[in-house]
Amino acid sequence: MRERATALLVDFDGVLRRWDPAVAAGVEREYGLTEGVLGEIAMSWGMLRPVLTGQVSHAQWMASVADALTPTVGVDRARAAVQEWQRYRGEVDPEVLAFVREVRAAGIRVGLGTNATDLLDADLAALGLTDELDVVVNSSVIGVHKPAKEYFQAACAALQTPPARVLFVDDQDRAVAGARVAGLPAHRWSGPADLRYLRAALEY
Image (cartoon, rainbow, N blue to C red; front, side):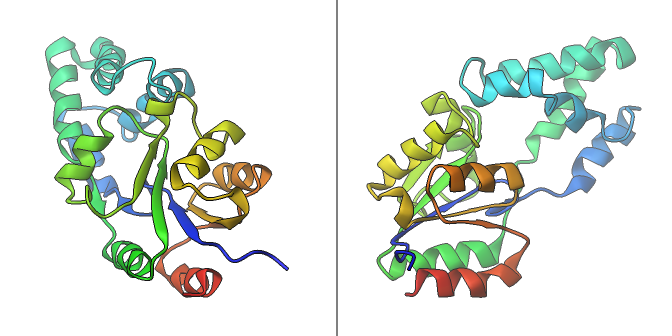
């Protein structure tokens, strides 16, 4: 018999925060860039890993993206394109936020478990989320990213809850698998239809 979860750890991007792909597509069109190139460059692992582990800042990461675009559109247009793209900071999923509030009201601690940059606190403030979570576990602060076992150990320590009692929710299979290896019950998020299952799993 599995122990009942007494804490919840939710991913940020793809769960609590959504991104409208039309924004990046619009910037790419406006600046004459190939469709999808902004995300492709930014998310390439060689560029992404250092910013997610706190070795470089968000600003340095974006400067590298602009540098990669410079041969195509020139330095000024590359920087302007990246700047415009970065102005958009995503949107909160209202159903997930309502669920987080409901869970906390029931006395269950909720943590944000995210691979993020040093811009995370500013993003949380801009999206009105600063007071909506009990703890924030940011990979760039702790120096290790999901799906590493050490990441989940740090998250459980922050929640002051043993792994077997922390329910983890993420939209990435690798993160879910990593959490399970670390001893957390984990659910692969596919959308708000999953909330019914999560409420049952938390038994509040």
